[in-house]
Length: 175
Image (cartoon, rainbow, N blue to C red; front, side, top):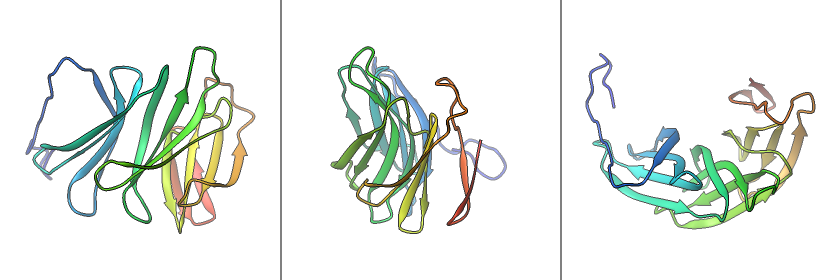
């Protein structure tokens, strides 16, 4: 953590023999931080920590093959929503993976959608979420039900939508 002058105010390194990689981090409304990524290469991870960098809780979400979380947001109705990808076995197509957890990291619901799509970034729009990822833009409600989905057919399987900003509730920019 840095202050406005760029000086380090908090720095934590966790060494316990397990690999963790954080892909997204957000400040929460109660001045803590929520982050998501991967744990031990193939499992999804969500960590909540305080302003000093002390871990409040961490949750791992195991899979037989690969499950990763790339983006996290505070939920519209509380808790946190994270998006990423899931594959249950070798040659299983990549699927959009969405998970909603409560303030303590307990799973409220989780969903998988599509074929060869993933979630790279999630944004709140009114009372819904917009998810961009590998070859798709998907709009879901607060329970994870798909409202609308747009396939970006001009992209190859290797190209991804990496970022998105909401201009208005009906206009978005993605790259």
